[in-house]
Image (cartoon, rainbow, N blue to C red; front, side):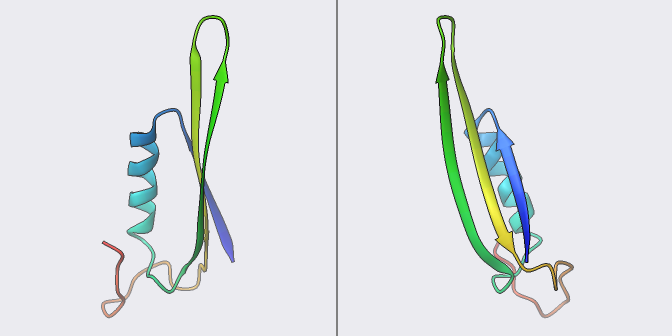
Length: 71
């Protein structure tokens, strides 16, 4: 089992990076995906942190011609 961690300041950036990574996996490789948003407030600004943790099997990360893709 392997993990991949993504951490971005904007949700659209996180979505793009996660989708690009998922294109490399088959449905059988994906174990779990966890998502989190953290917010920090101070006197001047509000800071967001969008993160995603993906658990996957590495065994067939390079797709062969018969493998199914997510997208």
